[in-house]
Amino acid sequence: MKRITEPELMDSPLQAKTYAEADFESAHKQIVSHFLTLFPEVTVGGEILDLGCGPGDITFRFAKLFRNANITAIDGAPSMLKLARARAKKEPGTERRVSFIEAMIPSNDIPQKQYDLIISNSLLHHLHNPLVLWETVLQHSKPGTTLFIADLCRPKNKEEAQQIVDEFAAGEPELLRNDFYNSLLAAFRPSEIKSQLAQAGLKHLSITKNGHHLFIYGEARLNA
Image (cartoon, rainbow, N blue to C red; front, side, top):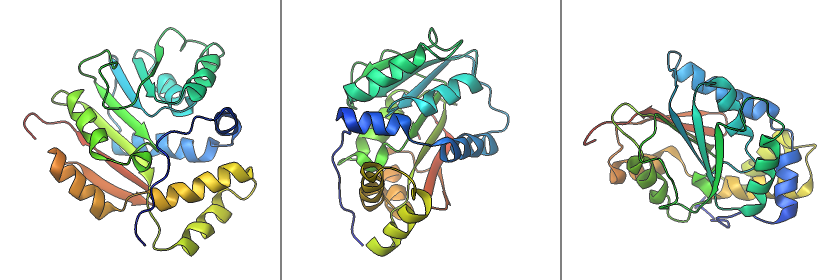
């Protein structure tokens, strides 16, 4: 099955509200757990960049994980950021350390030139030109920057995509189920991401598949 792109932004107030209220506890907990498995000794006391933060659930999980770090979280959807900023006021100890910025990558609005950790969850499959993600990662990395990109993996056909939606989003609102289905169709496969990384000068990064998720990870290198 060929990739079927979807809109780059999810910016309707209903979409933002649906995603903010959805139960991503299990999925997002597993993403953070996978990060800790891949990087068991990483400690970050500096700057973290979160690309495509949405309403901020992953952002706040990493803020709690690295309590001495500051996080710059980027998203192009104002309605998503509105909810993320509202949540920040209810998250003890994170409001002063987390900054949410409206921007579409590539962007000159990302304030910190280089970061100690760059994370991204479920942004790659939205991008019509995926290289902008890897170019942004390179632009804001320094040698040794930890890189952790999580995303969906495109199934072999539409029937398999529907089976995944039925299994993992059975009780969710129809809007979220439809978005999940479309996101699966828009996602990349490991071979495609491997090609992207080679083009971007990041071919040393590793790619692993876990269920219907992909993880791209490693450390930035000088002249990679």
